Length: 315
Image (cartoon, rainbow, N blue to C red; front, side, top):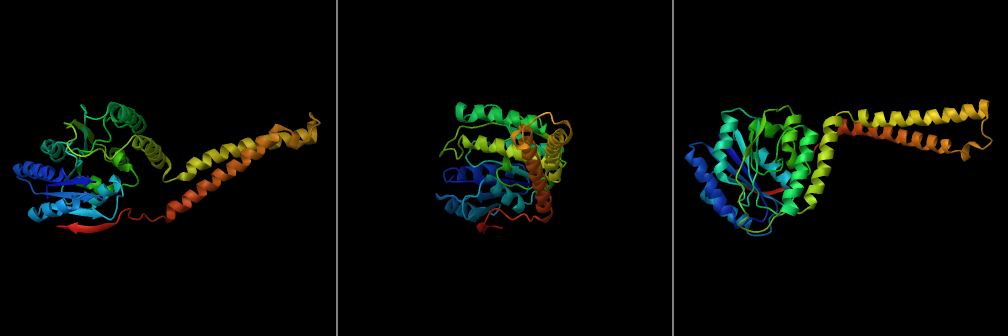
C-alpha cells in the first residue's frame, strides 16, 4: 500500500461523493496502490448512508463509524490505527482542502524523505474575526512554545511517514499539535507546503471561537507533559522545596527571635511571619504530595481507547 488518505468527518453528506471521487481519480493517475479511510465521528445526517453506498462501489474506500461524536483527535487516532499506507495523508471532508495537493505531499515524504509535511493555508476563506485572527495568535504561541517553525499547525491537510503516525498517541484535542508530538517522539524532519484553501461549499463550520481557548490550554498541557510528563516530581518537588525552605526560614527566625532576641513583645501568632511560615510549609507539603501521586499514577496508568466503533466497511 503506497498511500492511505484518512478523512474524519461530521455531518458532511453533501461533500462525500465529490471528495472521494476526486481523491480516487487523482491517486489512480499516479498509478499507486491506495486506500481512503472515512471516519464518521457520530454524524446525525445521512453521511453514513452515503458512505455505505460509496464503499460498496469502490473497494479502495473503507469506513469506520463511531457510536457518537468523540472528536477529531479520536477520529484521526482510529484512522491511523486502521491505515496501511507507507505515506499517510489527512484532509478534512468539507471540500476546503484540495485533493490536487496529494501528489506533491506524497513526493515530499517518499522522495524527499521528510517525516511530516504540514499544509499552510496562506490564503484563507474563513472569518477574519472568528478564525483568521485567532488562528494567527494560536500559531504564534505554538511556534514560540514548541520551536517548530510552522505557520499553520492546525491545517487539516498533512502528510506523514507511516512510522510517525504509528508512534504518536492522540488524546483530547491534541490533533492540533501532531507536529509537536512528532518532534517530541524524535521525528525532526518537519516542513510545510503552501496549499490551496477553498471556500466552504456546503454546511457550516463545526468549530467556534472556544476551540482556540481549548487549543491554548492543550498547548500548556503539551508543554508540561513534554517537560515533566515522565518526572512530575521534578516540577512539583522543586516548587515544594522552595516553599518549604521559605517556611522553615520564617519559622526559624520566629523561634530564634522569641527565645533569644525578644525584639517584639507580641505573641508569635500575632506576627505576619507566623502565617507566612504556616502557609508556605502547608503548600510546600501539598506540592510534594502532588509530585509523589503523579509519579505513582505515571507508573501504574493504562491508556484506554477513547472512542467506540459501531460499524466498519471494507476492513
